[in-house]
Length: 261
Length: 275
Image (cartoon, rainbow over all chains, first blue to last red; front, side):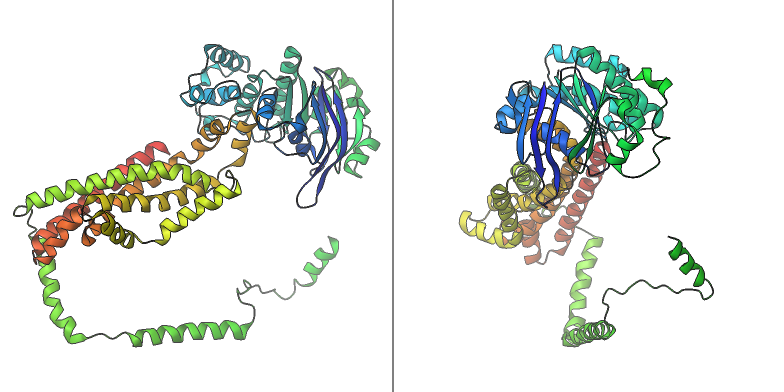
């Protein structure tokens, strides 16, 4: 469903963030993208919806090459890609409902969005999503009144109301405590399963990734170093991705493995 | 690590001193610059020529002026004062509204993080032009073109508002949180929707605060612009001074102070509600 072909990104400073990345993600697959800071994880997912312009290469979503689209067509294709951010990236002075409905901006005209008169079906869907993530009575609160976990749930609703085919998730748990992190990861993975959504999740926490995803990509200095199931992450593999360290505490025991399956 | 630690231990015998590194490293240059600045200051003071006998005579006139504040005369020229105030308020409100409406698109264009370079250069140019020309000079020019009266004052203040508000709005937009806007862009929003959802909520409190402040400035300026014939309460004030009617002038100044304080109070309430 998503295919990256020889994707390269070189920043103006000369830093080569991505060196010819090839990747194929089938429909409904949730994959984790791991790697050290600066390996190009954020750049990779931002090159997919072109918040960062790729230098060369192709990004196929279905039968459209996103890398070649003009502004209008890109805008229409972005509706099919929901994005979830590390620091939630909610618009803080807008209400929870406005933040969720902002996921529909690609579908409604300017005046409808300016006057906040969204179609009834969008409002119904927004309430349904807020109920699903347990925030139904928060609709009129301002986004900056919520806790971190609540904000990330709103961020998830905003991404899902786009009715996307693909979720791009950038460090969803990096600002959350361990328990909330698990809840948020579980929620994302459940929702992907319910809607048969593919997702690329950038994540620092290797153990957390192993707990929830079907496939792990290890990125190092802009190149794919590992592509396989979560239990393929041996100390040797982690050393090639991150460098020398004692990995035995990081890798989960075999008896916990059914969580990933 | 261990080498640094042992070095720290070795130095533990004699206490190490530390001073903030000076801004100018070379001591002779630092002292020379300091002495030059002091010498210039002294020379500047000595060059002031004060005619003390003239000051002594002038004290009487100053005293008459101050004494007039004790018994301001609102009554004998009340009709002139009222007309002048109404004209000033009309100039102020109209110039502020028009200025703010024009400032918003120019402010968006003058923010480097959202405007393409050519638009940015043009908008910054407009801002620079508006800020470079002092209100009084613009007013004199516009009075020459449009004749005496409030129209010249209204146009002057609208023009000055654009320079002030666009610049500060653009700076607030440049300092906004990029991530919030990025998230709105990622949903496939149009440019206008991105501004409305991603940018506007972040800069709205500041825009309203600045607008209130500019309303305040415009009112005070309208009192000055009357001195060059651009209408408003300033014209009335000018006439009062010309006739040596300090009691009427005092009444006008007290009204101006009252209005400015009322505006300040109002803007405090509005800003508290907007946060």
